[in-house]
Length: 169
Length: 169
Image (cartoon, rainbow over the protein chains, first blue to last red):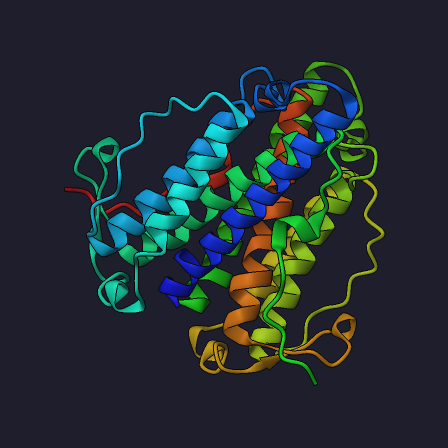
């Protein structure tokens, strides 16, 4: 299940986020303002703006998958400025995630995870996924969505969730 | 893992949300305005206000756990008006979740889930958790957080995530 949560579902949600950015670009165009205005928007003066929210979404997915599998993650320098830069960052994160197969996660729940910030403290892979990666990922995707919607972009819950893999009756 | 994701982690996050509401009450007090102002605040005119966001957080957790285990969920009439009503709703959701044990989830990933809205379509329990329950739950908790922070309440990422179950070095 950890593979399903971290690879196919994060890829789907990153694609949903990319589509929301296309809606944002269309809205900026129709209202004759620069998309940069949205990329620099925040919900509070001491919260990160949209570009940084999206960088953190991508880092959370990339580092989460990397630490759970031991497969080295690509390095990003967080230099994104324009809408195409941000969309390229999402695309490169999707490409990295898509290199991973279910068997890469065979030890993911029981492995030991640490990060440079934790000063030697550790979590099991399952704890890291449940308490850290998954909530953080959705936190920053939802905040990105809210920045767009607060500024008038016509996004709704379905844009966030995407299609459900329903079985028909 | 599905039990860890849906019971202990949702309970922890609901407690975090409850603590954020205490910060909101303290802020309203210090600025001499009614907490109701925050409960009725929205990030966009056509988004739900805070009270409704919290009702949906609670419903998502309650119905998610109920459909994955087959254990009937309590019925709520969504009549919450005041901060204490909303806090009581969170507390009752936590109490319901805490009745569940890991073995109640033994068929959760493979069971078949449907809802009255899906017109006969179904998901497996795993798909329902991954594509629906978990993203929706964090979506509405994050939106609640953002409504508070947008209005000046001093909440930060740690209030959202809560404590990590670190093992010390």
